[in-house]
Image (cartoon, rainbow, N blue to C red):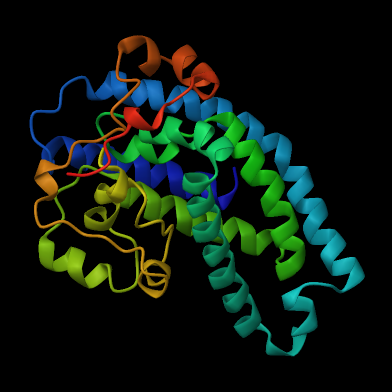
Length: 264
């Protein structure tokens, strides 16, 4: 297994255990069933990711062979350029995430992630395979433009899976620690708002690893009462939509604007 898979396995296992003893939202039932549903969808997405891996490797090799992309144009900067590419790839992830909320075709796939009625660390892996395919194809072009190596991509994904598992988790992190972490990283206090049923809150706080992008582009949103947040989009809460087959066909379902809560 690659580094990102090892990190994901260890971090998810640790957080799932912590959610059982130090939960932020109390009274959660059916945790194992909920996790199994999300991990089942993640397994299908993992197959799509494995199919895309040769494309990503080919993109990094093409960039190196032709000497194109940021890291090859600024080769003399060494590790500094790799760090710049790492940060810029996270900026791309912010932009892609924001697009998934603004473009209706992309939202059809991305809303599968947002229809989870009870957010925990397994929600971090709840993505429709169609979204994974679309983002994977777009990522290949970005890899060429940045001149990233495949090893740097794997490192980014390892850090990413650790951070997104944390900020989706139902672990009761001390408020002071969350405030300090959020100066750099996306934390649970930030991302729980993003999963709110209220549309203005759903359409905010798009960061993946670094919280700076939301501050820079004015999309950061916090709430003084995170314990009162209701998760989801206000639709597709019935058991038939929360099962694996329902999640897979959900992008085919229409969603009128009246189906989403506009304000608090």
